[in-house]
Amino acid sequence: MPPRKIIIDTDPGQDDAVAILLALASPAEIEVLGLTAVAGNVPLELTARNARMVCELAGRPDLAVHAGCDRPLLQPLRTAEHVHGRTGLDGPDLPDPTMPLAAPHAVDFIVETLRSHPPGSVTLCPLGPLTNIATAFRRAPDIVARVAGIVMMGGAYFEVGNVTPAAEFNIHVDPHAAAIVFGAGVPLTVMPLDVTHKALVTRPRNDAFRALGTPVGSAVARMTDFFERFDKEKYGSPGAPLHDPCVIAYLLRPELFSGRHVNVAVETASPLTLGMTVADWWGVTDRAPNALFMGDLDADGVFALLTERLARL
Ligand code: BDR
Ligand code: CA
Image (cartoon, rainbow, N blue to C red; front, side):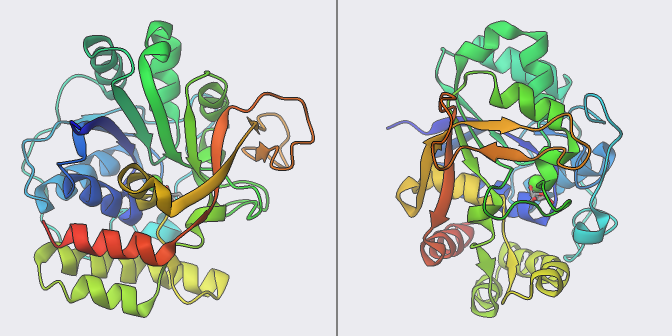
């Protein structure tokens, strides 16, 4: 089988960085057509910078990184420096990128890529707020039917929220964009907090990254060390959740995940629950399923895959 063509839409973020590295370490299965940066964990200028630093860390300065939307569709940007640090990629000491940003704007890149590839051959992998994807869908509705699928990190049902009592960060930051994407009719696979909160970087898993003895292994160990500081304190768990790599792990080994095909609607009106992903997990409405919403994963399997792939870089 030829590798699956993907666009990674991202706001690095240490966990975004690990997801990008996992994809770049897996060329037999995944062809990264380009990276599109979006404002999220930190402002766009930094996410576009961090994405290029990660490409260079992976030895892939040839990849195209496109800068996209610098703010959500309708509301001010909310960032997460308290989790990811001032740069968004605090932890390792990575050099400033030397590769330039690619033209055109991320939204134009998404539109052009979907139009220039056969329908059903490009998968979108959003790891941040859905602003770039929703803007592309609004600007060029013809591309929606050409998308093979969207595999994304965002939302929560049983875990409810991480930035408000009711909402997960990626969806809360741009709920209006999320509502467009969830309502677009594209096959959606969602990695919510319900799954990613089980993908914990425990001490032995962190040690395994460091034991790779490579620049990538040590950078990932430092990233996950940094990330851990906040989440361990918050959740009292034995390690921080590694959210975004679940998306790429699913592309590589879908059998490591399980979920339900359900209806998921995004709250855009209530100030109290803005960005909540209302998943009909128990099938109590007649709303048509629009997403494969994951509920569980084999965490040991995911971390074994991740460590084995990172060793290749
Ligand atoms: C999501 O928010 C970001 O902080 C992470 O990169 C991840 O995409 C988790 O809620
Ligand atoms: Ca992210």
